[in-house]
Amino acid sequence: MKMKKRAFLTGACLLVAGMMFVSCEKEEGSGTGGNEKAKILATVDMLPTSQVSYLLPIQDISASNPTFDEAQEIKTSNYIVPYKDWVFIVEGMSGGDVRKFSRNDNGTLTELGRINVGGASATVSHVCVISDTKAYATAMMDNKIVIFNPTTMQKTGEIDVAGKGYGINQNDTPNPMGMFLRDGVVFCGLGQFSQPPMAVDKGAYMLLINAETDQIIKMISDNRLTSATAIGESGMFLDEKNDLYIPCWGSYGFNPEHHSGLLRIKSGQTDFDPDYCFQLTGRELPEVQGGKLQYVMNYHYAGNGDVYFFGYCPAFASTPADFVNDKTNYSFKGNIYDCTANVLDLPRSNAYSCAINHYGDKVLFGVVSESNGVGLFAYDRKNGECSTSPVINIQGSILSLKIFD
Image 1: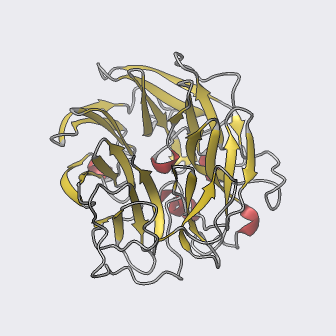
Image 2: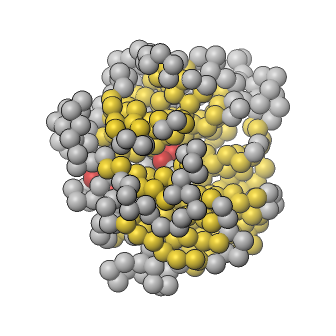
Image 3: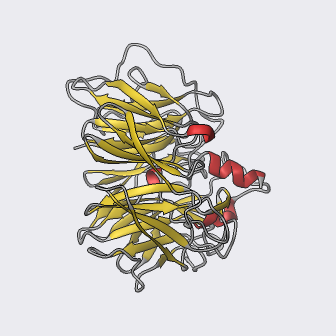
């Protein structure tokens, strides 16, 4: 159980940097600031060589060796939720605060305020911004959804979900986590934990909330996959048809009956699609050592059915598992329509590497490799080629990655 707690407390694949990393001290004399807003933002952890983590602005993909001159210090395992030119840092299991930053015209960041939503548990799972004056934040262990004004960063209300009949198997704590707004409805994943990250029982559960009235519409469930929590880099996404795809953690694979993958709620619908399930654990994958993954994390949808993700392969884990030094994670390209998944020709990474995003035709993966370097590796969607070394070298471990037009 100690291993399970460690895996969860750092977040869904939130990474601890390997011992190969150099000092995290801010470099002098070559600032990240420029003549326009930073197009790339990353959260970077420096553990175990340092307790410091950063929100790092990067001018663009040509900045092959960005410095930390303009980086903002944050807590470990934090991730980014963007809204217009605001950037919200969610502290996850490392704290109960949501911090707000602005992207400035000269490439720098300015902190504008913060709000504590974690209460007694000092945890906050996710933020979903509805408008300039309304946002939701989930307090997973307090079993409530805090409503706040993202302009003033002041609390305006809350939705209590404890003891309301939304827990399963006599569990009154459904544990609200990841959220997504579609067509006036907030879809909120529920952990339904016995002890994080283990779910009480198999199944994916979600609350549907009216974003105008803050009233819970209903709870839905699907027994084919488990843990529809979908926070941070593994958030829900829409395809071009306005269909909503929901990543499921599958209790990190600690229970072999709890599977990872994607479920779908079709456009205009409010229930899981009974004809769709993209299951990724418990199935044979010929390109994977040993044939199967233990869990899948951090999906990124790049359009036209292409989804990219990391998969944890237990065949490369030591005993006991060393999540920092074991190179267990494959990088995948999948297709959400034909439910296929193929390993990309990128170096395997450790179990905490988790940032994926795309910049033009390049899909960027945060990788801590055995011998090919540390930073953002690239897959070229046009020619299918993978970089053999980082296109952007970043000391430390990239936990969250957001790209701005």
